[in-house]
Length: 136
Picture 1: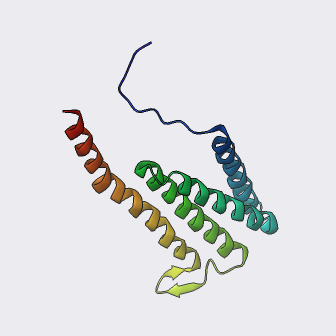
Picture 2: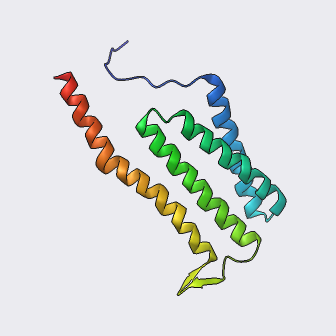
């Protein structure tokens, strides 16, 4: 077996089970949205969002994991808002200029993208630089 100096990321099995349930909730939410099952879609949005927040909280010490999990949390917020806007019929309502109710989902979508942009343009290069300095 080849030896490397690469860090190993492991996750306790109970955390992995929670992440797997998160995927199930997310899929049921999106299937419900697609089939216009309002009650089930709304019910699944809550655990999907809550679990994503818990996952982000648990990974807060690892900046890479935190950034990606926060982006996922904002993605779920945007996705849930968009679903709700369609379920309650304000997705096509003009909010401002040419922006409709569903376009408001761009706020959390862009927030998640901004977190990742910050991570990859500022934080990650800093981590690489610090790693190189400590291994020299």
